[in-house]
Amino acid sequence: MNHRQLMAALREAGVPDRQYGLQVRDLPSSEYIQESIPVLVDHRDGRWTIDVWERGEHWVEASFDSEEEACDHLYAKFVRH
Image 1 (tube, rainbow, N blue to C red):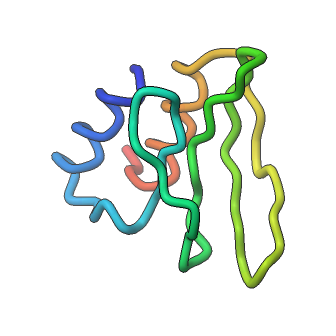
Image 2 (image 1 turned 90 degrees about the horizontal axis):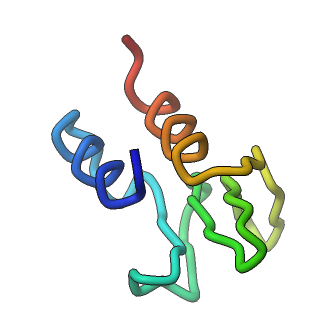
Image 3 (image 1 turned 120 degrees about the horizontal axis):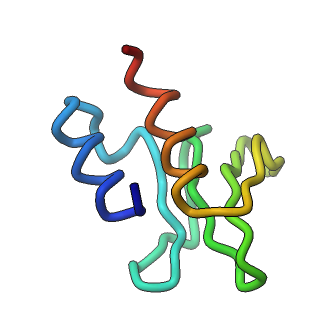
């Protein structure tokens, strides 16, 4: 799935938008993230990461070579089958 399909799937599963973030080139992004939430980040070099910011600290939770892998990982964090 891509990031737009991810947003639709998470909404369909009942996950509130405020529980995750998306920082990708074709969507507006927030400069200030208020909570410790996973954020899907699209890097210019083609990598995709799940980043977390909390109290001024930042770390990469997971890194992927494809958008599909990153989206699947983030979806699985919220929706268990």
